Every structure is written in structure tokens, then in C-alpha cells.
Image 1: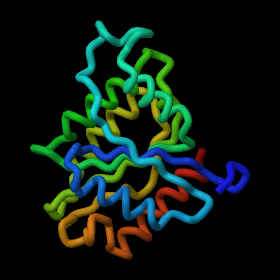
Image 2: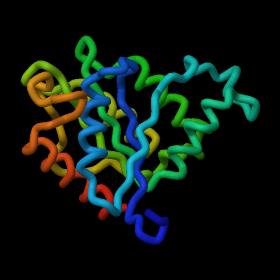
Image 3: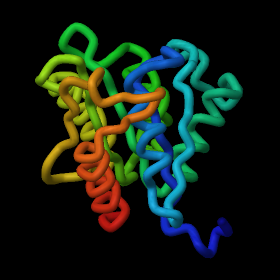
Length: 182
């Protein structure tokens, strides 16, 4: 696929570090189901803990690469689990790094779709709201309308990927709306 045939380049961020996490499985399922003119790079969130003392031009290389990946993307898809009624620390840490430098974050005005998931029927809605609140503070461009909240996630994953057709269709529709809104 050449740049001329690409409608959108997305960045997928799983809110979990587990190699077989449900959040990563959701992103992998979406990545496989995207139309041919949309690509998604999935990025690991293994970053040092945010520390303003090292948030300098000499910050660790992975911080610069993370911020550059956000800047290069046409939109960001964040998939978060819910840990103890909230967003995982690894995701909050990544958003803190992404929020800097103050007033110049690559997320300012960037289209972002948040998807939450949980084994519970509530689908991680509390974590979803926390991520939305953090993104609004930047301010990122959050997708309005129906939110993608996936309950009973364990029953929707097969071979390490989201495999529920109805959920995939709904989430792909949200991605399409996000791309159209940029």
C-alpha cells in the first residue's frame, strides 16, 4: 500500500502490558478487519514512569519515539481494560508522557477513539470515562456519539483476536466516524 492509497494511518494503544491481553486482542482483531486503505500500527506502552526531571530534550529514546508515533498518526485508537474500577496505571503513565510538552502535546486536536473492555457486563465503563476525562484535559479530539464498551470480553476473543462480528462492526463504524471527523 502506497501513501497515495492510504486514507488513514492509525496508532493503536493497548492499555495493558500482558502479551495476551484482551485489549491487544481487540486491536489485533480490528487491525485485521480494517479496510485496505486504513492501516494501524499497534504500539507497546512500556515506558519509564513519568518524571518531569527526565522530560527534557534528552529524554529516553522510547519517549521521543512514542510522541513521534502519535504525531505521525491520523488518529489514535486506545483500548483499555478496567483495573479496580479505573484505567490501568500503564495507560495513565503513557497519557502523561503524551500530554507533554505542556501546550504542545501531539494529542492536542488529534482524533482519538477510546474502547474499553472487561469480563464484566459493564465493559470497563469506569475506566473508559477516566481515559475520556484525561484526553479532554489535553484537549484531544474525542469521538462523540455512541461509545465502544465491550462487556463479557472473554467470550469475544478467539485465537488472540477480537472475533465477535457485531462488536467488530460497531467498532469499525466508530473508527470510520473518527477518520471522517478529522
